[in-house]
Image (cartoon, helix red, strand yellow):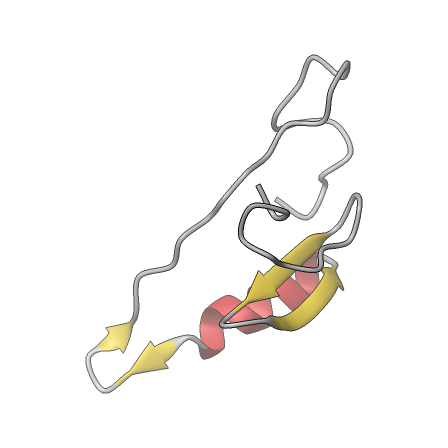
Length: 68
């Protein structure tokens, strides 16, 4: 998916994009900080989570992505 969007992504990590890479290879704490800072005057703003599977793993969530 990242290639089709012309994004530079880490292979196994969680990356935050906003017109380009803002944060790369975040751990759980970093991801929580980004989410909590994503606010406006009305509170939290919507976020979009894009998940892409790795071939041959058999899992989309649950193995290798402890951050989620």
